[in-house]
Amino acid sequence: MPEGDTVWRAARRLHAALAGHRLTATDLRHPRWATVDLRSHLVSETVSRGKHLLTRTVADDSTAVTVHTHLGMDGSWWLYRPGDRWRGGSDHEIRVVLATSAITAVGYRLKTVTVVPTERESELVGHLGPDLLGPDWDLAEAVRRIEAAPERTIGEALLDQRNLAGIGNLYRAEVLFLRGLSPWRPVRDVPDLPGVVELSRRLLVANRERPDQITTGSLRTGEHHWVYRRAGKPCRRCGVRIRSADLGDGTQARRAYWCPHCQPA
Image 1: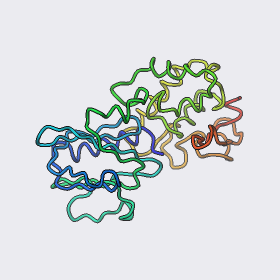
Image 2 (image 1 turned 45 degrees about the vertical axis):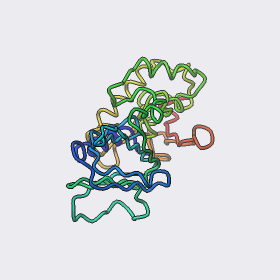
Image 3 (image 1 turned 30 degrees about the vertical axis):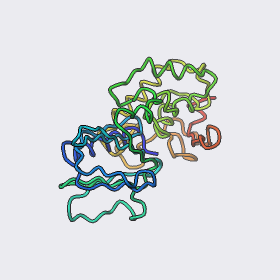
């Protein structure tokens, strides 16, 4: 699933392409929203909220409507100019088309598509914690939310978007390695929790302007990460084999990566 920095970058691209322009064609390929017609709506902006994208439009009668999308595991937005060949996937994978006279934005494999009055956006994203890359970022509030469940593992707490919005499995693995914390350590036993949360934000901020998500400082291919997706390979610090296992219950379980020497239980 894309991390918050990837979604932030997608929002910026959509905003640059659509904002200030009127929609000339729209196609929402979702049973509930298939009849929605946003033609002639002026796109005011596209913003990210954690891992959610909000494209806000205004009709001629000043009615404000938001197209809310979530990329899920493998969704993406592509931008095309007139005459371009659409290359983002098969036609049956298209979920949303938003077109102006100059640009057509096509959303492929989107997990979520919702259309709501802009004033009701909070019904969709109001449950989210402070956004690591948003104007509402509040370190103290994010820490407070995590500390509210002291028995929970720090690995689960960091991925819970109700605590802080935007961090995903990649940054969870890398932050915990850099802080020397086992993903299974209870929140109550984490020293300097504010430092853990702030490091999460610093990594997303450092990578939001580029497609490569680098946590080691190395730009060389294959050297971008410390432990993420490196199970069975030697730790870059101590040489011990990186381990991986599912962390969480049921459908909420996500793969954790850690070095058993650098991140003792």
